[in-house]
Length: 354
Ligand code: NAD
Image 1: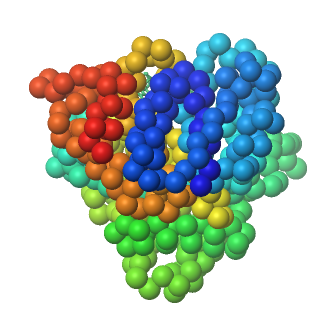
Image 2: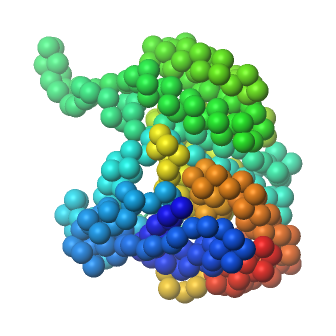
């Protein structure tokens, strides 16, 4: 399997270096992967004059999976929009047709105090939000701002999902649920919006192919409430682009520690781009203090979803749990009574725990 590594900008190279240490250790134990590296974002602009240059495109298309650090930085903010680092990220997602975004929100018991919610509500939390990423009201046509017949200005967007779009995200969500607690909650607003009434109908139909997964439905307003009231009731949640945008950020904050949260964006065939949920953190770049665990956990997701190596994924996740249990903490998750370590020390500790 070919794995392309895109360190990116800011803390990207530092955190990706730690994930590479973990992958290299697994290679020594027989993991059969071939690693290559390319620039994306600001680093790509510096090297090739474009945020997603042809050199990177070629390797990205050939790869089975891609591991990304993060892109962006204040030195690129004045560039024309098409040249900005964020365009590199949008470009690669579009180029590879990555329509399924998987964002787990896991709260390790050792970090329960990092959440703004009561520890008993969130301790042990382990949910996965599957968000459709390329359709819905964010892309539906027509859209715009116009003057209506009464002469008043108005803004309008179109919420739209085709059957094939709903079916393919449904399959991703059901398959993910099969690999976890076998419970899937589909979030909609079927009482008001026809698009999501249709979504619910397709989800119910696809469920017939997954008799081992228990499907439930929830209105998005209730889901938002339940996520803070009793989030541990959920295993996998699946929803459209706009609801998923909001709910996945809400869910990630239940854990309180942005340096811990991985993510995956998958295509139809399971090829994926894996990256931490946070950005390039220019404020702490180059200081060797960033938390590399979100990136290491992204590599674990890559092993699970694109490289189909559940055993190696679990091994990496257990190693992360072990270093937390040892009391090792980077600055962002440090609290009294624990041991503060640097980014590279954290990477070494995970490798040792493997
Ligand atoms: P950010 O996530 O980079 O940082 C927010 C805060 O969290 C900062 O204080 C930062 O120091 C801290 N933080 C983030 N990751 C951390 C880690 N691993 N360990 C310790 N602390 C961490 O968000 P921002 O400051 O809004 O954005 C900075 C840059 O990142 C911008 O250029 C933005 O466009 C870009 N960005 C990129 C992505 C991506 O590559 N997917 C996502 C979001 C933002």
